[in-house]
Image (cartoon, rainbow over all chains, first blue to last red; front, side):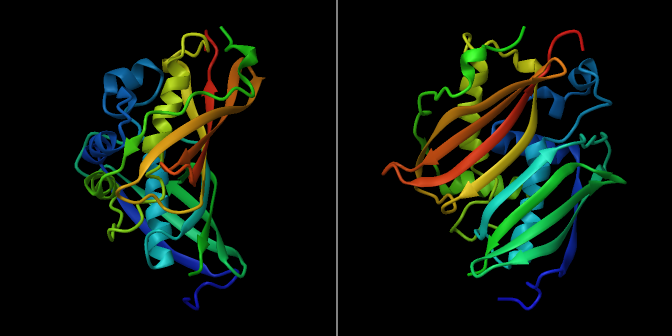
Length: 136
Length: 135
């Protein structure tokens, strides 16, 4: 196990660019075709500033960071978060950047407990995201 | 209109068996930029199966949920093992809790995802916020 898995260790920040095309692709892969994730017309009609990312897409990006930190996929044993702020994705080439940080809160015999921070711009978009990774 | 108050504690019928293919996992992994080594699916992949169970709840006319008023408030997964290609999975949803806050129904759901031997793979906890009218 990597020496970076010590209580208090700060994990390398991960940055993921998100464009409208990514949302369309995630809709197809996940089966969540709610139009607030691809239609400005529908999104604004329900009071949103524009098309927003699927909360589960943002959570999937945070899980991608967990895999990167764990050194391999398939090591996540628990993972949860609240969806606190919508990620508004403009219809341009750059989109937005989701930034995922993490700190090790506790290391037990079997598990590494991680507290994450998931932000877009200056806003936390997931509430209390936390995970447990298997050590083996 | 609030949802059916007898909902708390109710368990719904399991979803139809979902055959997990290598191609579906790869599609999901590529859509999220995740690595897929042919072993475990990405951690949030079980939402594909849990989503079917949640949809069945939300579309049940006796429950009284208006789909366009539902917001996903919280999601948590607890895994026994990762999802693998070749799995045949079902999700069985139970409404764990139901409460009202400020005109909204807060519906706590738990979907138990099992393979075709009945062995537990993952539990997906989802909190659905059903907003009241005139908001």
